[in-house]
Length: 408
Image (cartoon, rainbow, N blue to C red; front, side):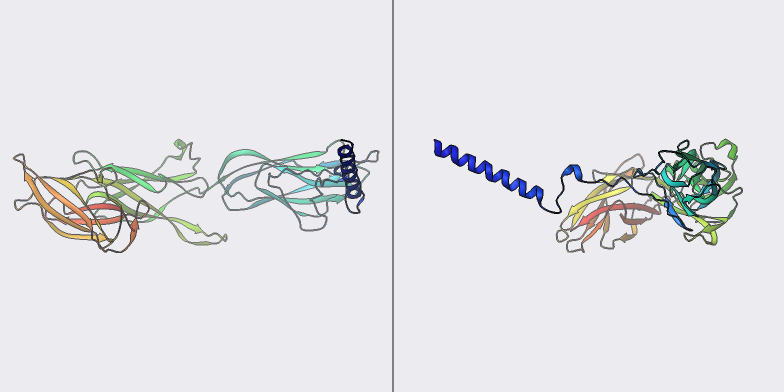
């Protein structure tokens, strides 16, 4: 037992000796001796010094205040500025003057901010007594914002005014607001009532909007340009606006449709580099669905979207699905497929009659197939396959289908 105690004592002594050697090793410091960098001045003296003042991370440096007089005295001619309305991506700036009316050198430093601002072009961040310096506050918003007060802070070594809060007012908008944004939906085309939709283009920045040209297919829709009372459009904060009444005829291509409408405004288009080009063009899609005398049914058909789903399948095996087509007032010779336009081209459609009803309707089977050995392809929501079925029905000359498939 004495031997064990002796060995333990020796081990404890070795551990203590090793710890002492490490502690005394040159270049090694204890945690208490480690200094922490709490920030450094971020207003550099000299012309052109820049102060990015985005809010995160918070800045920790404060100019050191003397323990005894004399002290500086900071004076700023104005502490607020209203930029008004500015276009997202543009840049505006305002110059401020800071004066030192004290008896000691004034040091100024960047503080925190609540705006997308940059403080720049500092003449001098150390201002002698009874002298002044200028700095420029730039605002370059990247995202829209409603009118609100924002703030930028300047810190000083004036014991009576350690922090100056510059109040910045303004709102950032995109030049044009399209409502609805990209898709103007008519919905299901009615054979009884009106089939129309109204879209708008507002501008919070431009005082007057005029339409220079409309680009659309007049055989598929009509478009009427109407003035807008912007005083009633409080939510859009618009200075100007135009309304577009889009009307679709009762008869036309059946199934889902998405029709392009190009609107050319008389306002020059603003480029990313700040320059301008020709007239501004806004493109939207007028969408809806026209059922007409043909009604498609089946578990692989999504009527709201007008989509036939072939699912995912081995391209070497192919895939086929069967749908039922209820036809109202069919031609005497029966419904016939005259032509099928497909994208991708391997998609096929075949039509065969199943039964006739005395009530003036007939039921057909429509088979949509992708043949075995077809190329691998994936056509889904963002880029569906498309089929145009052309028939001999006088009220259903075309039926447009979207097809979802993945052939692997």
